[in-house]
Each structure stands twice: as structure tokens, then as C-alpha cells.
Length: 499
Image (tube, rainbow, N blue to C red; front, side, top):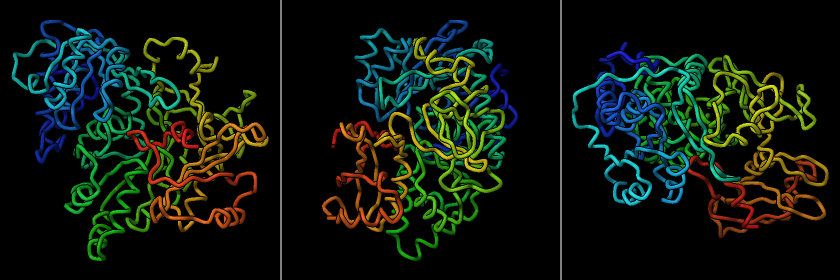
């Protein structure tokens, strides 16, 4: 079988190697190629080419998920992966917004989505139907410039937008990470991330499959199972969001001394550990370093660009910083006056390169607003360059608080609060205030639980030793947990309602 798609072409070079470990079973690259071609034939259903028809799928992280995604691409369709954790209205929004013509679902989701598929006149297919052998037909030639995937933004400030990427975009996103992080055929990565997002799809699964490495799925994150899998050996690469590292640290802390040593020893053979999708608290980085001996590699990306900035694989990984531009990616910082900034001056991160998405699905005005007149993608994230390394100050609309004439980074205050011995986690936001413009307030998660009492006056005095007075929160509330989306990002607009 030959294919016009680079990812599938490359897989033909190592057909006997293990591509996927899923549900305690190993699957070779040849099995992945065979099943994905079989699925493509089912999806075509007699057509020569799906010609960018949207194919949505709700399939658990698995060998079958990978084969479905590859099958969609080989049939000439646009892959629209759905999130297992999203409620029915969110799934309905994506199906309607993309005008998906085909929906593939695991048996577990069939009854939930069958009425919706009927209502929207969508061809509904169970995963097991696509596994049945079928006589192969000639697959279409799919050019790199064709649209490949639609992923949806988190929608924390507005309705989610469908981010359209081409095969060329995806190929570049994969290749720049393979080069920067020195991916190898002998790598074995554990994937615990949701597969409706660039982090799990590109950074983990696709990078592994690009080089002939092995991607092992754990369908649902469980700290105990992750540590058990680490201790069995084989795995040498791991990527996760800060929340996952926090939970792994907590599990380690609750373990016996013997178990702690076994867990820590199992990490010595790891080649690379990466954190992303949300800001990595310095406290988590330092705790993980003590446990594992590894300095987590923090990087920066978005649905619209894949990855754009990364700490180096070889060289200093600077805490509190996201690193330097990835190979082939251009980065600049621009202030509110449109001036490109220099060292230590805050500005919006703007990106240009083959990694940048094609468009927001059927939103020409939103697409136009997302780019500068000279073609740079406007991220909305504020950063500064410190001696060659970028440091995120926050998202302009959420993490940059404008109070009393100052522009204040909520992330800086959060890093300080987490250093307090009584505080487990926190989130800092600005709420409207007639006197200050925005008032700085903080939600605290205490180590003793939400019923624990903290002396606010003493806390403010402690903060005065570290922060100027204008950066100290004026109000505090105690909660048992912070509201988060499925990737672990704190949904700060939801948090504002608590104040």
C-alpha cells in the first residue's frame, strides 16, 4: 500500500515495530496500516474521495482511535475528534458547527448519540463495524495543502472556534518537535492526555509514530496505574499537564519510603519529561525534580499553532520560563502601540511559520482578526524576553490585571502564594472595581482542606516581604478545588462568579 500522506508513508518503513500498546495488547505498524486502510474503505462507501467531508469521532484513546484518525485522512476527510468528557450539548455544537456527514462512535456512546445523529442526518457508524474486513479500494491522493483536522478552542471566553489545520501544518508541527526534542525510534511514551487536543494528538501520539516509536495508551489518568506502569520499565518519555504532575507528586508523598524509592528509581532511565497546556508552577517543577531527578521541559503552544516555543532538550531549562522559538518558527513580542519590544519589556506573543493554522471554521471575520496586517498570528498571550528565554505573564484578557494604573501578572502572584507553607494551590484574578479598575483577589486551596482557617492578616504581612503592596490581593476565598477544563486549565471566568 502506498500513501500520499507523510505519516502513513513513514509507517511503511518499520512495519514490524510496535506502534501502539492499548488495553494490554501490542499492535504493529503493519496492523495499524492495514486497519486504517480498511476503515478508509468503509468510510468511502463506494466514493472515490471524501473531499474534505468532516468525519467526527468519539472513540476512547486506543489503537482503534489511531486507526480511525488515519482512516479519515486516507479517505480524504477532515478529522474532527470529540471529547469523551464533554456533555451532549457541547458535542451537538461541534457536530452542527462542522456539518459533519459521518460520526464514528465506540459502542459505549452509541445510544447517547444515535438520536442526535438521526436529527442531524449524520451517517452513524460503530467502531466495531469499521473493524470488519472489506475488500480494499484505491484510496485518493491527498495533497499536503488539504485540510486535515478541526480541533476546538477551549471556549473559556466565548463559544469554541473550530481551528482548521492542513496536512502541511501537522507535518511541520510534528517535524519541529521531533527535531527539537530528539525523538528516537526506541522511544516509548505513555499517553494519558485527552485526544481532542493538540497535546495528546500531535506532541505525543503523532511524534512517536513519525519516528517509529511506541505510543502506549492509558485511557483514563490514574496516578496509581501511572506509577505502576513507570515501575515496569520500557517507558522513557512522558508528557503531561501540571495538574497530572501535581497528582503524581501527591501519590508519591502518600507512599511508604520503600515505595517512594521504587518510584523514583523507575524514573532514572527516562529520556524526557515535558509539561504544557497550562503554566507550570515553580513549586511543582522543583518537587518533581526532587522526586525524579529530572527538570521538566516546559513549552508553549496553542490549538492554532501546535507548539511555538520550548525550553531546550539540551541546555538550561529555566524555571518559570517557556524557552525559545522552535526550529522554523518565528516569534516576536508587540506592545499595545504596535511596537516590537526588546528584553524585559512585556508584549503580546505573535507567531509566524508553517505551523500556524489555516482558518477558524466558517468564521472569516474571526480569522481576519486573529492576524496582524503583516501576517503574524496574534496569540493574546503576554510575555517578556529575559536574556534569550520567554516568560509568560498571562493571557491579556484573563491573567493581566489592570489595577490602579498598573499592569499586573496574575501568574507572578500565584507563584508567590504557592510558596506559602499552608497553601496547596491558588488562582488570582481581577474583578471590576470603580476605584481600582480591577481589584486583585485570590482563591486559595489549603493543605488542610477548605475548612482550614488561615490568618489573612498574617498572610498579607508575609506577602509584603516578597511583593510590592499594589500586587497583594485585597480579598481571599477558600475552596476545596479550582474550577478547571479537561486539560487542567483553571477557568478563571467561572472563578470570578465566586467573588
